[in-house]
Length: 335
Image (cartoon, rainbow, N blue to C red):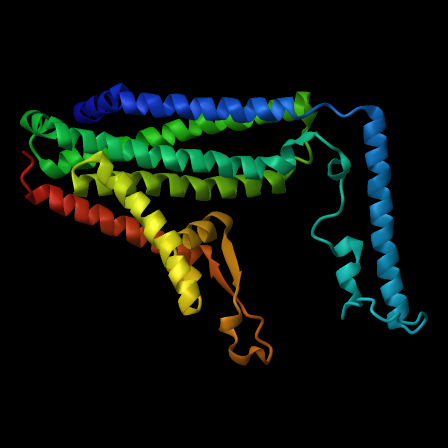
């Protein structure tokens, strides 16, 4: 317990961690201020006009549905060049995933229910970057400066010390993420209540938001572990930054161009960003003509990567880096 408390104090005292926290808060403030300035509380005439447009849109959808049924029954002729679905239920307003709502026809009005999901993804992106950089700096600076050696003189046991550092990092990230989320989404909820519209905040909305946030938090923790593990292997913070930059430039950009030139099929399966997207959103769908040789038959040319396999890939990568970091730290000379 004393080791963990000491590590929490060391992490909180790091200037880089304090700087990153200040930048994180600044990003939150700028995002909230921009949203507040660009939104306003809709007036009664604006709401009435939007409600009229909603009614008109729904009536138009119902008219198209009835027209489709009439054509199918032979009561109306089918005009040339007019699209007619195979099943008229595709046009039934009552069977649509989403009907037009008032907020769709309001300009410069922040609607919390509609913007909460993309705002949560933005928050997750901030926290992923924060966790990766702080995790790398936390262990990298200690290894480079000899701080780990001094710590081992006080508390012998390499694996215990490294494990305490990693556990402290993850614990701090969980607490920081929870506090940030409450402050961040709470601020935008207040903006929706006072300078916009709250939207439809039902059980489905909160359940989907919580699911997306939970997936994002897994990414935050994995990114923190990756930064920590790569910096441990490289014995310096810059090792993690170098690996990240090299992967992004050489593989995600350079290799993608080469694969396009070589006409490689399903190259998205070779990119780590694909699995990040698939896990965060639950599934990632891609379309590629090369999936269907000759372009014939019932093949649609699409393929899907779901959240389960995506998480397995991310866990395998993070686990391999972590095991290698602990194995290397156990044996090598730290001086």
